Length: 83
Image 1 (cartoon, helix red, strand yellow):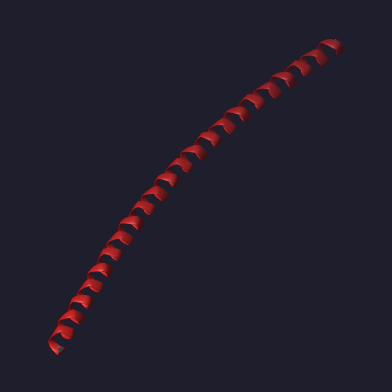
Image 2: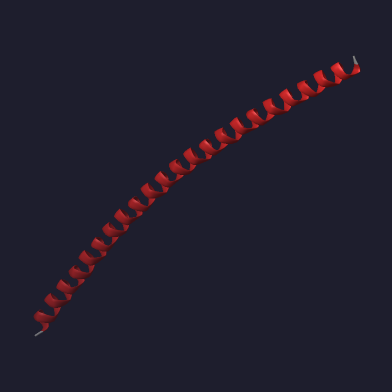
């Protein structure tokens, strides 16, 4: 009887251990998938932010170029009026 009880207890322990491993494995897989999805979303946001920054920088450079050209034109007009 003691041997039978020991076998049953060991069998239950093995089943519980296997069940925990499977659950742990599933949870780890879910965590990895969630982290991958978060990473993908964050990379998309970063890409969007970079594109926006590039556009804004381009616009700022264009505006600066136009302002410089206006200053040059005004200087040319002033210089040609003096001579």
